[in-house]
Length: 605
Ligand code: GLC
Image (cartoon, rainbow, N blue to C red; front, side, top):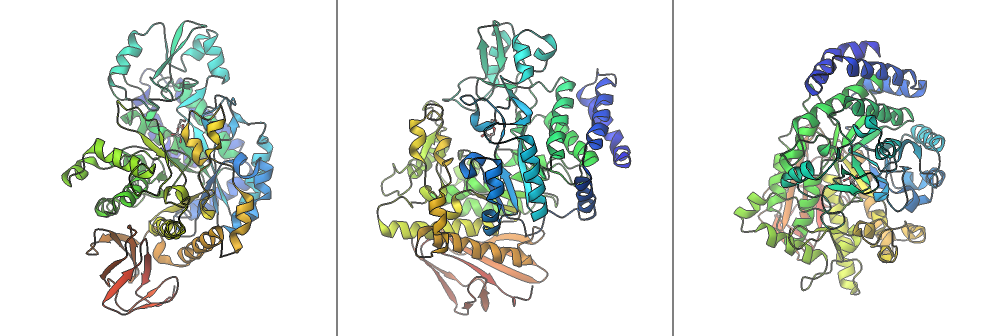
């Protein structure tokens, strides 16, 4: 550890100097001692794993990882429950498990667990820290990586720092943004957008009991931390390392773009954020070099990639591929693959260290962060297009089979977002059996597309059996304001029991996904180091992708429309990677929402 620390000491010191010029070394020394302390507390099994991973720095970049994200309570009631269900996850092929926030929070003020009241305690209904550690041990023994959220931008108003700050403690107040009156908050508001315009309007909250106003970008009970105070960085880094030492393999840096505030700006993606992210990366490198950082950067396309840092100075090893995710849904609604094609080529130009987590759905809404300048050149106006997408996916548009709900719909902003499970969004709730069949094909095609992308594919729990929306949140007073609960329903084990029966929707989907996932894990062409490009298939509705590696190629076609398409065969003489069919004909017919994975070499890998 000392060697690693020495090797990056100069960079750590320089970053402290840049962020905290008046510190005089106190906070820096604290940081260094804290790293040593955290390393001393790291158990032997984890240190051994770190050493192994240091020798194989690409350990997480293979085609062998398949992820799933889930809520502990919705999936199995508790951490023990999850442990009992590991066999199911293994049957799903999952070896990377993201557990949604499970640290201590207050029930009716939890934001789904993203308002943390204690970074070192598990929410009692879900279990204990010992049980989390035991689960991590068990996962490690089975070769499953574990990912946990680290909510870095804010704490719950019930966190001890927040409580003390509220009671007037000046040291704790300096960990947040406290104001005597609205003067500065009003200045901030001039340049600040809103995260939750309808569910939590404004970026500041007045606390009548102490006559103060506190900064709250998200919900009023989520108080933004002030990283201009170096002790916030020090203590939060120590919390992060504490969780790493419990056996987490990946820590998800929640809402990372927001952690540095600058009056007169939108307080997102400030240069200082990247310095802080780099410091967190260095802290992990020193203490737990086998642990990875996953950045949650839900921003416009050009703002995302900088969070990888550079190959020499990495920040997050993994980022959510939010751009491809939301463009995929746009493509489905428009049946026009133009933007997706363009983005695949843009992603192909990123530096070699970039690695995305690919997904169709997650616990959050789909925000329409598309490339509007380009869409504008194709005749799509931003507000009108967002409205079309929302109308299509909420079933308002004539002929739509989709069953989503809007999220944060403030008519003045014309920026509503969307909620719903994959199955419900593609029409599986329809009464019409034809539409339901079409929806299963569409769901499979979307998953095939997700699995084709470079990076780590992550399923949203329930999607493997086509779980529908959960409308019961409308009846729950703690949840009904937040439509994201539409797709956070209880996992339905009765439906999961049908997964072996291919005559059921669940069985058909589950088995189709497993076939594709297995094939992906077998073929080196799916490794992240394969080259991936998009090509023109001659049809606006059919996305064409080529992955090449070691002289072999996988040509993939995805029909993003319900109408059958015929395209020129892009891989004559090729073989279907899933069913062995030969593609000799000059043209290739794809059914509505059909897809193909075509190998142009023997399956010799
Ligand atoms: C992230 C989470 C989201 C949460 C927010 C505030 O965006 O994904 O669920 O509401 O951060 O913590």
